[in-house]
Length: 370
Ligand code: DAH
View 1: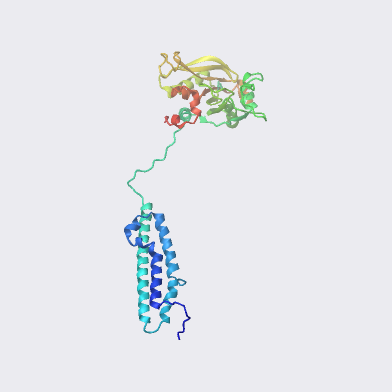
View 2: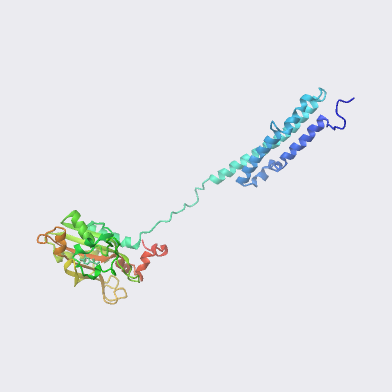
């Protein structure tokens, strides 16, 4: 009588090994094509890495300690001595074949991944470099720097004022009377706590004399603000440059000589300057100055509106009240001051039809200036 239970169909050990061997082959089947390096070469880096990981997983699940194959291998010890060499050899053959396949695939994937990685990281030194987009200085900055260079060469220091001012610096100290229209709500930006955005750079005259004392030679470029509706020639914010020279014995001749020299250096040695009597509260006497048109040399053109002259700024001898308010004795010291608009000068020099272009931050416009 057989020891086996009736009806149980147990496979012969050799058959069992063969069945498990087939299952093993099936488990690795989806990787089989990668034993050909050409098939691996079709994969991109991510797909190769994924295949490598999956292969390792299948290797563990189908050949590892807990796998059906590991259980099958235990048969070798359980079969009779005559069958043992046959079973053992079969197991070995199957396993060698599968391991060889897995190793080849593994190797193919690995070398392809390395290649792809190297290709991705390699630098082609023959490629032209990427040029960083260089910025351009703003046209107002270009003109401001030219003005600064000229005055620094003439022995002036550059002062930086503040843009938010008290009534004292913007008006009172500059001898601007209480009822002057410039103080009106409609002409200036006031803050709710009694400050104002400066409406002129003349404010810096006061700060500079208070801090440095006299004698002094300074220019102060900067932003000023006025309640203006923007149009081609007006903007509520614009740039001015203020000049101040105070010393013993300064006369109107020094003012004329300085402004004339400045304009010659700015617009060429044959530039002619003209002074016209005018009025400013902080200078006495006061004058506005014009210069001969740099384009037509005085003959008359579109830029100078056919007059041959371009109006540029205001100037005069510093009013004794202004000197007194900063503690300078007008009997000992005298000085001249002047102020002009940088934007206006910029618009003239670059022949801009609309001053607002300067503040729209359109790079297509701005990158034209160097
Ligand atoms: N601050 C004046 C303005 O904004 C310009 C000016 C005129 C400045 C005469 C001066 C000067 O220093 O002396 O219109």
